[in-house]
Image (cartoon, rainbow, N blue to C red; front, side, top):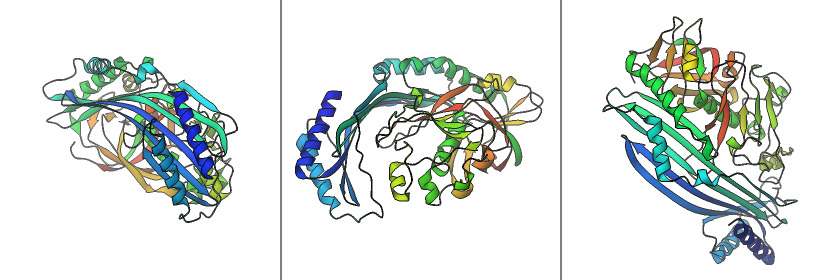
Length: 461
């Protein structure tokens, strides 16, 4: 299949050259499988195979794109798409800058992140995984829901500037299990990300769900008062916070457009806690990495923050063209973000709850309805959901109703950070809409941040 894809792109390149076009071709193929559960039964079991071809035509400072869903056997249809893009570009408004057309200096192929066993999991295997993870936890009132998504992703590129190609293939899986009480309306969840079949393990999910259920069934829920709390974030919440920082933090294009919470004069200065070291590491297969970017630049581990010190902005090729900057190898569909672990021994929720504590601690594993309030100040807002706990200093545990946090990322990852767990895990943030783009961030299992304000506190679930 790889050879057929490359040959097809080479044939399309020859066609474009023969017509005198300046063309960039981006091939995307996905095999996607989704098993969805609701009310303790399979509610949806579907799959799709899609091939997309994105065609970008250039003419000086003009650029135009045309996309089609096609098939490898439909070469004439793809040639027509090239003609369409070439006709469109003549009517495009010129850009204020000269866009770069990639000219790959050598061909590159990476299939190290592909596991056919994960991509080809059977329905029986996925159902067995769900059954093991939820065994003995469902009742007449506590129902299971969730998803098991898996598949394969293939990307290939060529341009008229070079005969060389780039080719990437990955496999991925994302599992979410939710147990909800049909009458009381509370929910607890457990999740897992996988890059290969061996990553899948239902036992930790079962243990976490069972632990949460024990508290949610035995403890009386409470509305907690507004005010300042020492908060322990779980991996889903940490990944969500980093996802927003990825957008409004260290991106050079966002900086130039006035949409960043960081400034150029902060490069080389301590911005966050010494516990905060963040890098983009394409050597981590669990993040479904690009080892070369889509402009052909080789990608190596790239420090963004080192013990809180800002190392510099990253630049996509097109933003670098527009603002006369140097691209940094980050022209990718997603980065491979890794937030380094610390030295706190806490690798499971049960271990966390058993730790001695001097004050009440609010555990928030998941942030829901998260969004940006003020990008230049880094203020975001989100509410707790799926298994929050109030860990009392006397050793008891309270189940709180959902609360809302509205705070700056500069505070959340700043000097208020008390500790970061040594244990880390990949957390899958893949979206289920649009072209398949498996994405995961490696984050610590827990992170405690002191003195954060709760702006709203619900009076019920």
